Image 1: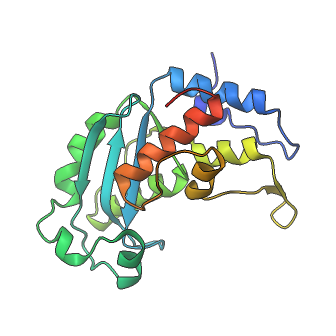
Image 2: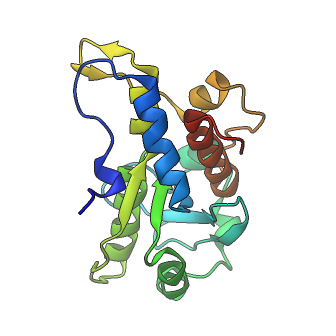
Amino acid sequence: MEPALSNLVPQSPSIPNRTEVASIASKAIASRPVYIDTETTGLEKRDEIVEISIIDYDGSTLFQSLVKPVAQIPLAATRVHGIGNSDVLKAPAWPILWPQIRSVLFGRLIAAYNAPFDSQMMQQTHNRYRLTWRDTFEWLDVMALYSRYRGVWDPYRKSMRFFSLEDAGNFFAINLKNTHRATADALLTRAVLHSIAGISY
């Protein structure tokens, strides 16, 4: 039985062979993953999702929606992603959207840039409505994979350095912008994974 793709990102502190990392990316792409990105009210334990986008393996949009949060969107968050309280005033709440989101994600490998963050925010948004989180999805963290591909050692953290999505896009000269909106960033994540694999996006 082969290990899950999400467990294939090398964890060794040694600089990996880029061919090996590209092979991992190629295998992930061959499984036809979906790509997800979320925008949120912030980065803390009670913050929640205000926008979510899910892109299919071929770059088509499977799902996209603003999400009306329980709490107000702080101005600091709006300055990052441009989504204000007036934008989400008539947007559906998370419990209304979740059945459709889950049906799109079910049985698929989910690729995201900083996947632990998106996974955590989905759970936190669930928690705001006192919903029980029962779903176990398979995730591929493209940020961690790109970190291994770059192979820049961070002596302070004693691990490979992490880079922003924008940096990854610039490194591969990808003609897509990191806009901090969910659909654009999910498409950029897809392009980064393809670039790691050396496959056209």
